[in-house]
Length: 160
Image: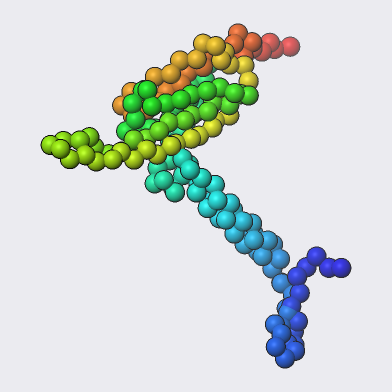
């Protein structure tokens, strides 16, 4: 059995001719890229995630000396719209984006609620009990202090 795809050189009536792929690595790269595109379409179509909603979380994780800071670009929310949880060294961000207008002059418009979800891996050595979250100018900032063991220590190098 050969692992290299073949195509027949001479086609029988009603069949497809097979020819050996001369550039097999290119063929594999094309297959990998196609699988990645299909996977992206599946994951982005989940409710609350990705381009299917027309909105994505803009996330940034900074591992600083004494803290780990997670920033999420989340314009159009209120501080009370967020549901944040820490589970198994992951920060879970949930929010419901409300769109619409209120009733005026006897006319009413319905609000549309769009659930948003993201999960971020956190490094080991953070103090989950002293987490602080703030929301200002469309940016959600979640700050985790590091435990004493996890803080960076300076090591002096001695010459011998």
